[in-house]
Image 1 (tube, one colour):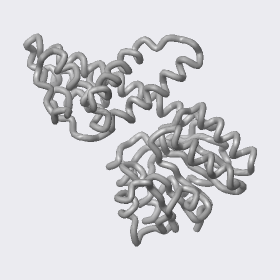
Image 2 (cartoon, one colour; image 1 turned 90 degrees about the horizontal axis):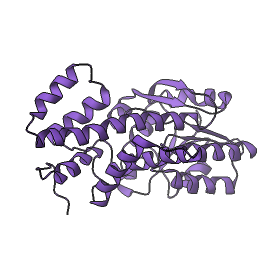
Image 3 (cartoon, one colour; image 1 turned 60 degrees about the vertical axis):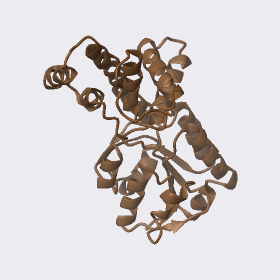
Image 4 (cartoon, one colour; image 1 turned 135 degrees about the vertical axis):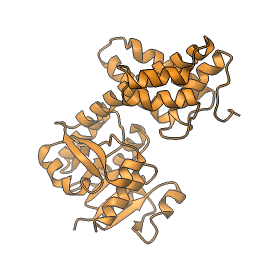
Amino acid sequence: MRKIGFIGVGNMGRGMCENIIKKGYPVTAYDKNPAALAYFENKAELAQSSLEVFKASEVTFLSLPNSDIVEAVVGEFLECGVANKTVVDTSTSYPESTKVLHAKFKANGGRFIDAPLLGGPADTAAGTAPCIISGDREDVDSVMDIISCYANPVDYFGPAGNAHTVKLAMNFTGLMYAALAAQMFPLMEKLGIDTKYLFKIMEEGRYGNAPFNFYGRKFVEKDYHMDFALELALKDMVYMKRLYEKFNVPAFLLDGGLNLMRQAVKEGRGKRDTSEIAAVVYEYLGLEPGGKKVT
């Protein structure tokens, strides 16, 4: 079996890496967080750096926070040579960066694929997270057996960068539903409306959909348990904003959501769940925001 490398074994990477190991692949893993890496002691070879992982592996998976980090890590790979090596970026990266990295890898005899997941950590651990993937078709086909260890279904979206573009589009849609509901429910509470009942009626009616239902319940219950860190959501929306700026066109709806997210991060909520954007609005309206106080 091919030698697999995995860089970034945090919330999402852990499930992917573990499922690959369960299928019998030899894995070398690295994470800058010692606690995250320690989970794989006696399960995988533990490396001291990203470059060590890459050198030991035929196919290297990345699950990293942002494109800046991906570019830095992959830059080291390019310096040491990428011929006959494959990198699969499962992060939610900036698509234009992905296209550049793909071109550099291809020019140097390597393969670069973008394959973000659409599910959360629980789906990934269960091996049922949907995956969208793009890159040269032959390259994609060569890693499908590995990706199927942790993802189902896997949908091909064409040339490199497309999967990351589609992932941003999906996150944009879901997060704008969140931003809308985060502003609406606190105002309704201020006006004396029973927001839990309002949510029930909307959820069961024509306004119900997955992102509205997911975030709306959190907002009316003021339960902001961690699912997706706000700083990561903000990063994704900044990437989306850059895509609009590429064509020099305004992003009317996006700007409102961005302002709300930035305010929440400014207040110290960045490492908390994205749903805490509602707490900002509750506080503006002089209402009890719920959740833990920001210190």
